[in-house]
Length: 308
Figure (cartoon, rainbow, N blue to C red):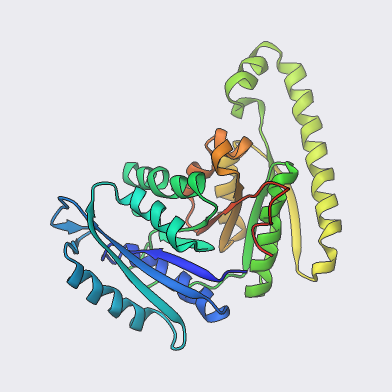
């Protein structure tokens, strides 16, 4: 599934939250892991409470230490320090993703609120929009103990777009890897959670809007039934449900209710993830979810699938 993982690190324990997830994949698969640190121009003295790594020698020692203590013996761990100072760390990571061509970037979402949103847009969104790399976003740990990644249940939100079904295939591969179950979710808005033009139409034609949403709910149930039928041959435990409400909030609440360990979302990147990205579902889910989120970079049908 994966052959090369890229893990950006800034020297802080917060960024290192991503390491157990990269190590878990490395222990399951024959992968190469590249740890990267970018030297920032005019950096603050500390970053997330840790001394900022401002010179190549310190950064190299740090990455050497991480390679030994965070990964199982036998895993091929490469280290790269970008020594030329840059003012835009996010863009530098994007450029290195293009240079190293990893299959997956594993990174912490770094905090909450404005900083977390900024990093999501500045790094993860740029990587997806400008390249072909999927991103595993890991939320900050709520405890001082290092996180342990044990994937038992994967949540896959869907919107009925056949292109987004590539996300299902990645989720299935991930579930096989971890011996996990899969839960498919489709969220149909309620009249009060509609946005944009649909919200305006709902206010003008409440009865018609309610009827259309009911039809959408029925179509979603039929769509999920078809997906379950297609996936019977996987021999995995796969369940599905249609929920009503605000898409992002419902995805997050469902993840909490079913105690999932991973959320998988597909994105077209440059064209804006259709219903998901245009509706800001992915950033909202990332900012609220307490579990990792795998953003799968979708390919056009005429191109090679995301993962073979």
